[in-house]
Length: 42
Image (cartoon, rainbow, N blue to C red; front, side):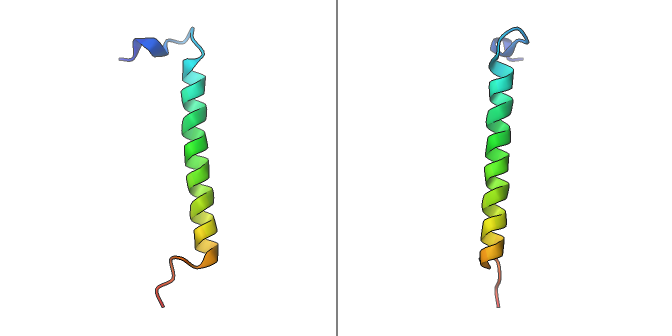
């Protein structure tokens, strides 16, 4: 499907690292906002 992402190039690891970085920063931001009380609707 994506010939430029063959196993011989280092690209799959870069894309995996980018995805993990994005997910990790999203989870950290969500946890920070949760602790600050952003999601409380009292």
